[in-house]
Amino acid sequence: MKNDQSSPGTPPGEFLTYRDGRSVPGACLVSEEAPECESILKKIFGDGFRVFRIPEDTDIPYPVRCHPDMIFTVIGGSVAAPASYYRKHAALLCDIAGHTGKSLVLAEDERGALYPSDTGLNAAVGRDFVIARKKSCSESVLALARKEGLRLIDVNQGYAGCSCIVTDSVVITSDRGIHSSLVSAGIRSEYVSNEGIRLPGYDRGFIGGAGGYACGRVFLFGSPSSFPGGGRLSEICGRENISITEIPCFPSVTDYGGLKFIF
Picture 1 (tube, rainbow, N blue to C red):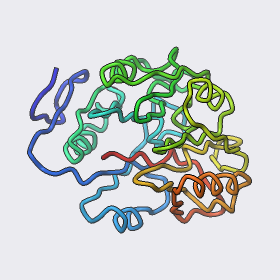
Picture 2 (picture 1 turned 30 degrees about the horizontal axis):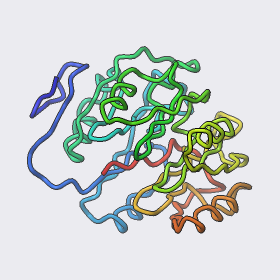
Picture 3 (picture 1 turned 180 degrees about the horizontal axis):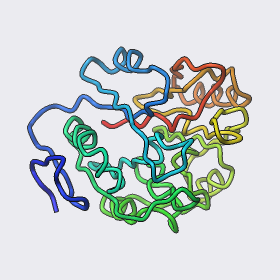
Picture 4 (picture 1 turned 45 degrees about the horizontal axis):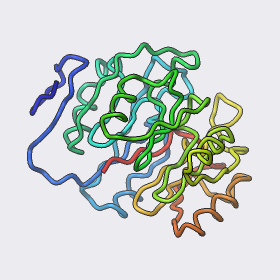
């Protein structure tokens, strides 16, 4: 079901659509715990660009409760989010949908703090494909992929979104299994080790959770020189004519759940 105008009281399960004729200047979803990045992003994308700080989702593990790559999947004209999260943060989600002109799809799948019940929305989306662990991926995400005609790359890693930075020309991943699956599927992929990527509460984080991609740029929470895989990342980006924009982060590259851009 689609509503032309919606309010925070719209029942979970609805498709919320905003059609007010405004141009869509774009947005980025960032953990409320991430370093300041608003000034950097607005300088690049303009004053109309908005950064939405994402508050915690208490249904998933504490260290990643504010991570956009655990809570949202952006596919085509839609943003998928948990129905349980909408019930707590309806105004925020409606604001995101209203600003970006996207439909908001509310996923009713059961969520929990134990893997893989926390991975339903954790997918990496490319121009014509979606990378996800099909067995634990939300049916809402799978349905959107089918609707948009995207090919599903089924992988063993439930945290597929965390594990990948998807650019226009290549997927950069810190998961060797995903890398192998992409190569087998004929999709260009490069592996970058996640050794040294910080994620407080865990041994290490993921390359996707430490960055994001938009408009020919990889954005990174920290400097490539601060983790062992940084040289490889810089090499890949240089070859692909992709610039790297650092968001100051001490003491090293840190996984905050990525920068999830919406255009």
